[in-house]
Length: 394
Image (cartoon, rainbow, N blue to C red):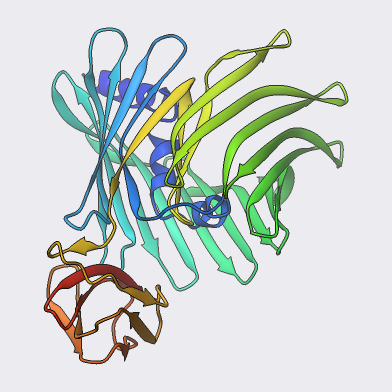
């Protein structure tokens, strides 16, 4: 049975990036924020509630997203699979956060004969200018290290050092170095050999004047020089990328490999399709369909030929039908914030457990005494109506 569980854990990872690749894009990884945050402006007031995707062989998958009582933090992802025999539970991810909204731990369970078995665990620790992510897997009823990533942030550069567990010690395996400018993001990928870092790949992300990624040129290090490898082009329409093409360098020319198209509602991708080039004809095929949602926030990859995502609206919590209709700025805030509304009565700030921390009878007040984190700002007008919105204190 232990061997079966171990094998299933690896099989689950292979099912179209259902586990490792997908859950990593949902967590608050700085790499995700600096990269996916440039893929156009989107509506941050809605979050995915369910995703359904299929592969050309007929296999189908779906994920149900569960959030906290304020519809803010993702706390569970329930993944099911249908291989022609009906829907069956596959993987359950459970997330735990600290007070500041940082992910502390993500735990994966696989379903074996109707029983949820601990399978994988991801643990996060945070420093002032760094973050460490440790990946573990359950083997023979024990948690075993697999790999870890250490993020360091220095001005216009981010480094990610990848480590592998050899059974008794950590050994550095790869180094990703991100260098930013107003017009590009360059990612240098190196591997350790002979006690020194050796070039392996380089990805150059070109940004337009709005900060959107317009294309990604990937190169490989061959014979002490950089050679073309792949080229991804994002075609934008109304602030989001409506299509994406993926070309591969072969025999001195670019050859079309994949084409992706997307349908948006309220600024968020709800439908995506993948086409592959076959003898100069485009046919449905399986690939990483990138679904973007949320302002500067998230992007998920679903491996298949088609994906559909539905969302829930998490716009400010309403106490009654006669809403106040206010705006608060800046948000996130460090010091003073202002509330803009036609009829201001008072403002109250609560933590995420419902404890009132501040109250103000004026529409401009200071939140610098609050710790970093997410709070609820309740605004009442002179008629006694109220409305609550989330604010972030940095």
